Length: 397
Image 1 (spheres, one colour):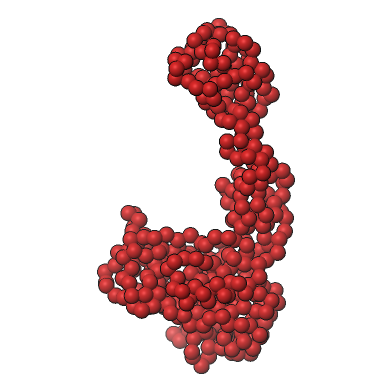
Image 2 (spheres, one colour; image 1 turned 90 degrees about the vertical axis):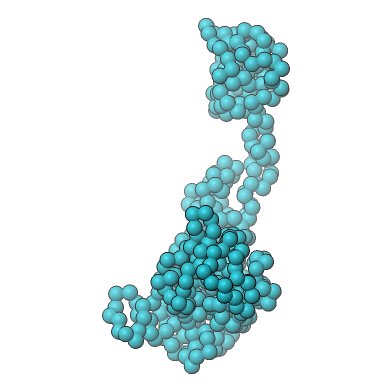
C-alpha cells in the first residue's frame, strides 16, 4: 500500500490496519486447477532453459569452415529427438527446437540454402556469420534454481505456463481461499424480486460487492441482509467472524441514530483503527481488526461510496490477507472535466476512458447516483485542492 497519492494520514492508518491482519494458511492443489489462486511458495527453475543448445529455426547445422562447400546431408534431427555428433564436412538438417549436434558451430536458415540430391550448399557469405548464429544457448532464458514465479503472484495463463514448464511436481503450493462475509445493513433495503414501496430501495450494494468478489478465485463469499438493530448487527457479525477471515459491512457507519456498526464492532472486542477519513465520497469509512487478525471493514451505505471505498481501500487489504504481494493495478491518466471544482479532500470522481486513453469525468448527482455509476468505467482519484488534470484511474468493477 505505497501509492503516493494516498495522503500520509490515511496511509499511516491503512498500514496500521494491514499490520493487524493475519494471512490465510497454505494448501497444495493440482497445477491444472490453480488458475486464479495465489502462490505461497516460489516456482524455481528445475533445469536450465533451454536445457541444451537448440536451433532457433529450421535449417542446417554446420561447421563454419564448411560454409563455402557443397556438403552431404548426414541426417535430420527433430525437436524432441536425441542429437547425434556432426561428422566432418557434413551438414545435419535441423528443425526449430532440436538440440544442436556436438561439433556444429552455427545453424544456417533453410531459406539461405539450396538442397539437391542429398547435398546442400549455402548462399550466405562466411563473413556474415559468427559462431552461435541461430542457436539458442543453454540457460539463456533461466538457470536451474532461478526464481521463475515469486511467492504472492496470482496464477494466470502466463504464470501457469511457466509453472507447468519448470515445476517438477503436478501440484503447486498456494494460499487457501480468503473467506469473506458481506453484511448489508438497512431496514429500507429490499432484495431483488420482492415488492417495493416508495419508501424502500433495492439492495444494490450486496449484489455489487458479491459480483465484484466473484471475479476472484482466491476468495469465497457469502452475503446476508441485516436489520438496523444493534443486537441483530452484533449477532450476525459475531456469527460471520466465526467462519470468515474478513467481513464487509455496508451502511450503519455514519453518525445517525441507527448507525450501530462501530458500536457493534467494539462490543465484540474489535479494534477500530480508523473511522471517518478525509475522502469524498465515503468519508464515514471504518476499518477495524479483531484480536485474531480478522478484517472488519465498514463501508458507507451509498452505492458510489461503496464502489470507490471497496476498490481503493478494502480490496488491497483483502489481497494482502490472501497472500498477494502487489497493489491492484491503476494508472495515471490525463483527465478531462467540464468544471474547475476543487475540494480539500481526496476526491473520487466517476469517469469513462476515451479511445485516446484520457479519462472524462461524468457529471454525477451525488453518492447515490447509480445511473451515473452504471455509465462509468471506473473513477479517478484527485488529491486535495487539485482539479485532477493528471489523476490516477481505477477500474473497480
